[in-house]
Image (cartoon, rainbow over all chains, first blue to last red; front, side):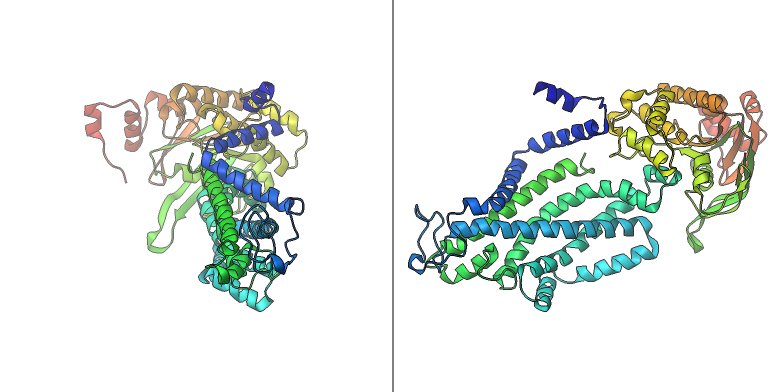
Length: 298
Length: 258
């Protein structure tokens, strides 16, 4: 253990991977020193664990109806109670974590790289490339996010995949803007000039020199946006345009539980709390990542 | 080795145009160290950036090693001419290890034997292999500048453009870097163009120098004349006097040149 620690804090790395391991370890230590960030990380890790292990952890099927067991209050028999069809809310929350994670991951892996690429290319090459890409970005930015998502979903039909597509399509323009702004400050620096003097192609400079410097602020922004993505997905679900019944999705659960809110509070409140906790987790994690990763803060 | 004829460089357009370099010509022989001296804003760094290809907004004629230079430079040109920047804190990528900094030019030019070349380059600039996998933030200013010199030399260029390579380093490190450059020049038969405002550095490094003011070359002289203080132009004399240090009588004599 002490040997490993010495290896991870050595000031003369002996190989490429050693240097990387030291960097990762130092970032991790900076991240771990902030208790709020660790709470956020814990929540996000818990979301992933619950989502992957949902079939094992859930006491019942999320869609099994039992009309003799309607509206049972949270207690020993049903930890989170049951809903209007007698379905176990705990099981539905656990399976709902899968849907939430699916949305979050899919939006992150589609919107973030597109935004990063559009922004860095636009910022680095400038001129008509910049003008064209930024006007397209402007068009997407001009629409309110939920409204554009609504339009997409109504054109493509309701469903979880279309909701994700709609959210991803509206999520990338801010990333492109951030990446472009970062690129504009980076492109005039001497190390880019040095790379150009070595004969590096524009592609090599964007991918090898500009993207690594933009990605940290983008990761932070994506993490902070995750709460918004979850809420948008929940909002689409709430409006009946996201996940369709009987699929367990937190927003749709809040929506259907709303009718019984006064008599049976848990039906809408429990999934609402789940949305709240996961959004909070992503926000705390994003804040901590900003402190560690943002090159401007150090 | 290098011929520059009637070089003009301007920034901006229309009414806001700034003519940074206004028709200068000079020649540098192979193996020579040529100094470009002048105050801030005299256009000396702009000449270097135009020559290196970083600034394409120039007119006139430039030849390196007999080849006329266009607006876009070939890979062969980059292998022939390299540059060392003023600020070692800005000229190294903050997320790249020394290893990556030195491996990249080799990859671009498809040169083989990467490991050996990187280790030799580090030894030559006096750093040694222990520094190979460090990040720039783990290096001092002088060590960073050594890495920048290693990066410039790893392609085995014939010409090195030096843009105030020591002005952001402290005095003891300045001497080390200058001696390092002198040694590398002797060993490899390099040709240097050194841009600086420090006449002591010029006297130490250069064979000939050109004094620039307001985008023009005021005077060309060799370094022996500089040492004897035999400047024929008033501007050069004033620059020389200023380098002798501050006193009240001298400060009163200062005039503005346009």
